[in-house]
Length: 212
Figure 1 (cartoon, rainbow, N blue to C red):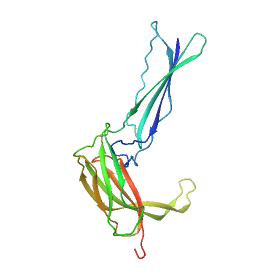
Figure 2: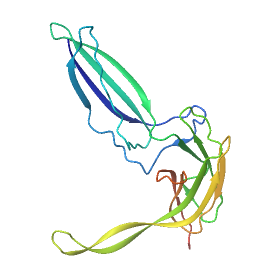
Figure 3: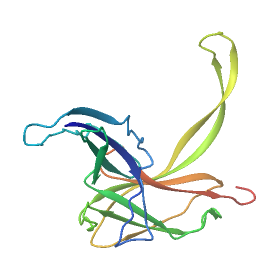
Figure 4: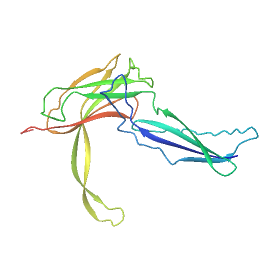
């Protein structure tokens, strides 16, 4: 009998049962799910068939991926009978979670706190996880640039990241409470990553006060 297989990846957020109030996200990743994978064929004499639905190497996502496969087997009249199977794909062996204990708007030089945790695929805390913590401020500058086609000059806005603070922490069996403060008004982000990894989870906030 003829059969048709369709496989797709969809991005879903990771929700921790152990830490439901934490945000688990990779803000540096791109959601590269690609086009559906489709394959057709015929069953053998015993009515069996096999399909290789390969996970692309270097796959990235802001959360985790749900791999979903649907196979349809057609009877003699051409009517399909469908069966669906799915599984979860974790692009990385860890997930970083943040819980912001402070407000979105805050005054400069006011101590704030954020809780940090890292878990594995089974939602278990990763003891000894080394995590760089970076506090950055965003600034917008007008830059004079030449248009690549018309060769005319024009001003464009460009966002720059100014590093305010950088630390390295080691996580234990539970959430690590990290304290910080910003020295002046501005748009900020606090980023937590893994040593040697380009991905990070972040919280964003704004600080404002007269005269700063």
